[in-house]
Length: 356
Image 1 (cartoon, rainbow, N blue to C red):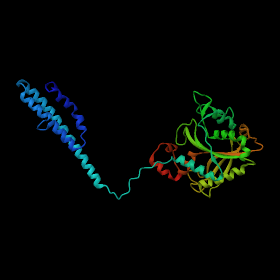
Image 2 (cartoon, one colour; image 1 turned 90 degrees about the vertical axis):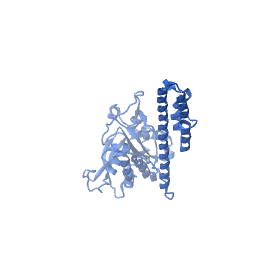
Image 3 (cartoon, rainbow, N blue to C red; image 1 turned 30 degrees about the horizontal axis):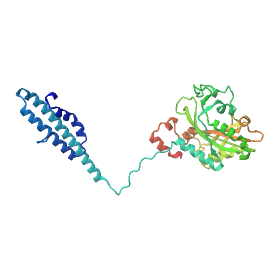
Image 4 (cartoon, rainbow, N blue to C red; image 1 turned 60 degrees about the horizontal axis):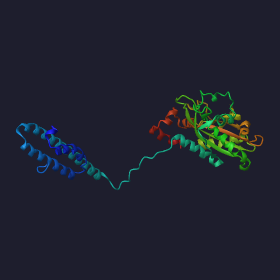
């Protein structure tokens, strides 16, 4: 029925919703109400004058159009008035309930993931012994990841079923351990090792292997590895260092034991167990009643690893170790499922404060 109304009235009807939404208080709303449905000078008053002067045959249709438009304006004004008054009441109620003597609200604070906190804790344990942190890329070459560590060509870890190789660059891969950092560091310091008097460092970080995700495995996990190179280094130095570090981690009464084992990059190699910190070696579910928990692998650096870096194994010797951060975190917290550390459940993460 817009064709029965003057063009300026039709245009005003179209702009009414935007003008109504722009009214931020009751004064603005009253001004708009006067302009549209007031008794004098308003759009509605003009329409009533138009209706009086209209031919008899048009009055019915024109009256219906005017009533529909007025009803639309009045309902819109009434609804907007209710919204403005409700907001005003809410603001007054909020102001009345505010106590200026109360301290301001404290925003929630974020925190490092428990695995990162545990890695930081491991690093801090070794700092008093003169160890520093070395880092390296997570995308590595076969030379650094395998060859420099005396890993033979037919070793299963080199198969694509175990290692993530990059499709566009088959000679590149996601590192399977943080040991490539040790290779890179030895290559870098080989020339001035004598001036340094040796080297000692840790290499914490993420590593990747083609493991299916389950309660104890993940294709991405974390390691902390350590290495020391010097003159006349033997197994007694390795055992003494690890005994100090593991007692700092698990308590002064912790005992350790070394069991012979094989790793290509150390000779001799060993597995290191600690007396179970959860049951004080009396026997529990975690240690399977034995009183001991396997914690890391270690050994004296293989001469071929030193030779690869250009270091004379007759003059220099050293030791290395590596531990899985997730394994230690699961043991300390008795967490049954590795995936909990990656799922960002706030309840679980808050409960892991004991790993600090």
